[in-house]
Length: 339
Image (tube, rainbow, N blue to C red; front, top):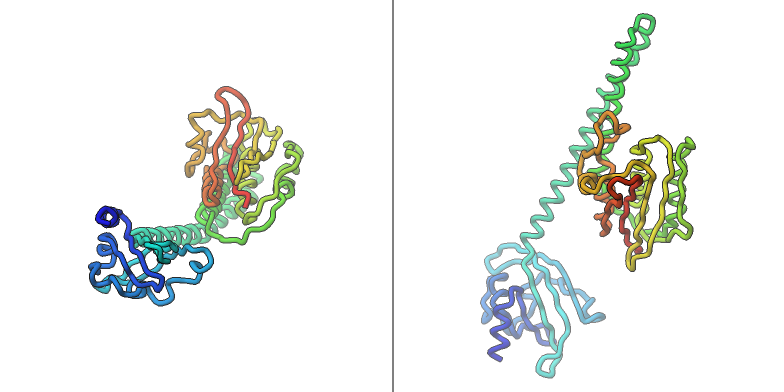
């Protein structure tokens, strides 16, 4: 028994045992640190002394296990957040409960700070996008009016400069849109639905390859997954658009397929473009990173793969690039949960 008590007092989690009626029988030193009560103050008292009324649900009656995050108070009156785990056990031949408690106050505070930061980022991106678009459109309109009014006397150099100005305005508008998309990626919660991924890809790709310069090959037997539709749609849309936008010849072949990986589907979107050197694979997913000078990226903002990475990881998967040094072609592969 002394050995058991020694182990109990040196476990970093709060540990206690309850009798069948929910009264505290054993209570370790970490519990005392968490709740501020010494063991002798609580042994024999009901667990409701430590947890708010109704905190222990009915789930334990069905499964024998109960897990809950609750807010409660220490002896001093300070509010704390705890994760409370309880399971049915047999102790000394009698039915009882074993409980593990962790103080998660710091974690919850960090989560709340992160949530506020994300909300502020989205609000900033939304305001920046909408407040800056109006003057940008005004600049674009003015440039067009100048070009129209001075068409008869416009020098080739002036015409070139006005065209360059309008292209830069369009690039800033695209950047603002992508910043807004990035800030919102993973923020909209949708119910999962059965998705025929072959049909989804066909719908996404049709307008992107409509000019006939690119052909798309989709593997037979593409899987059905149960997933929120919008994030998967965004991932495929960004990857197909990127493959087209960054192709050095302006025409080529894209291929999409899938491999079953236990609980995941490993999708891939490949192209026959210039490829991506291995040393740049990680950089390609960073914010605002382009692998070519800005004027040669076809309007890319460097956010496409960043959005893909954020969406894939939000769904519990991962994304990476497959491309051999010195060889043409690249594949972006990502894991997506089947359900």
